[in-house]
Image (cartoon, rainbow over all chains, first blue to last red):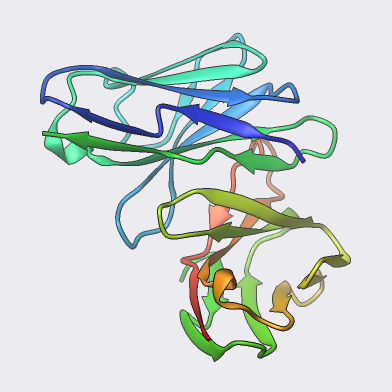
Length: 115
Length: 112
């Protein structure tokens, strides 16, 4: 089956630093990738839709200058949390849409802890 | 009212029992997904359905488009099936770009 990887799986950083999370589709090309955030015991919340070669589309209430998304190739999208604060601590998950059947495959997630 | 409703919210079963999780939705969809999330967070895509029924091992997913309802069945349940099961739909609206709308999930606990 299709595989999506995320790196790192877990990151701890100090308040004010920036953190980059990578999402890769390993065996298929993904023109569209999605970034989600999940707080404990809550459902996934879509943050933004990342389209290869164009600007990401952000959901209402998500600061585009704080959560920078780059989708430079058909297999890689990155999410950079800039000037991270403790309230940004969360579980970040990406998914990638394959273009034959439009099925989405999810990455394993990245747990971010901001001290 | 959420566009995607799952029931039950929590489910506890004994090993070997047959399990059913239900999902109802209120919008037109192009596809419905069943996802599994284990403690620790990683999400696995179990099924994508647009009609009928799919089977994979002990898992069966069905969908009734007219009734806007889907069920996920687990036969011969096992403690390793313990996880949160999430129903998600791709709304059939123009320009949705395949964004998913998620149910709140069903926490399944299978006791040995």
